[in-house]
Image (cartoon, rainbow, N blue to C red; front, side):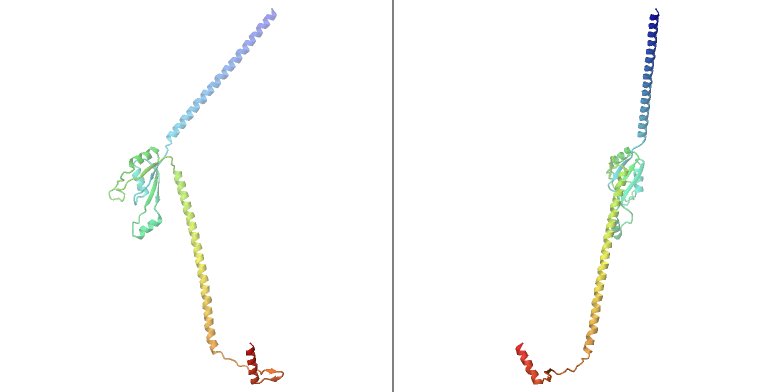
Length: 258
C-alpha cells in the first residue's frame, strides 16, 4: 500500500511540473507574439510618418528657357512666371562679352542681354503646368516693352536638379579660366620674343653705325697722312757695290728664268 501511495504522489508531481512547463512555454509564446505585434505596429507607424514627411517634402521642378527676349532681366522673368507658381531660383546666362562690345561700338543699346535661362519652381507640378501652357505663347505684359510680342520657348526638364546646373557652370568657369591663362601665357611669350628680337636688332644697328663711323674717321686721315721716305742701302755683292747696269742685267736674267 505504501508503494502505491508513493507512485501516485510521484505521478501527481510529474503532472504538476508538466503543467508548469506548458504554462511557461505558452506565456513565452504569447509574450513573443505581443512583441512582434508591437514591433509591426511601430514599423507601420514609422513608415506612415516617413510617407507623410515625403509627401510633405515637395519635389522642385526646373524649366529651361531656350531663348530670352531682348533686354529682359531675371527680375522680370521671375515676376511674369511667379503668377503660375512659387519660384525658388532663376539663372540667366549673359550674352558674350565680344558681342556686347560690338553692339556698343555701333551705338547699340547699352542694356544687358541674356541668351538662355533656368527657372526652379517649388513644386514639380507647377513647372510642368507652366511648360505645357506657356510654351509658344505670347509673353504680353505692358504694350511699350521690348518683349511684348515675343514668344515663350519653355521646356520642362525631368530628372534635372539645380546641382547639375551648378556643376555645369563651375566646369564652364574652370574651362574659361584655363583658356584665359593659356592665352595670357602665349601673349607673354610673344611679348618677350618681340622684345628680345628688337633688342638684338638694335644691337646690330649700333654695331653697324659704329663701323661706319670708324670707316669715315679712317678715310680722311689716310688721305692726309704723310708718307715717310727711308734711305735704302746699296746692294753689295762680294763686298763690292753693284752698279745700275749690273742691276738691270740681273733683273733681266731673273725675268727670263721666272
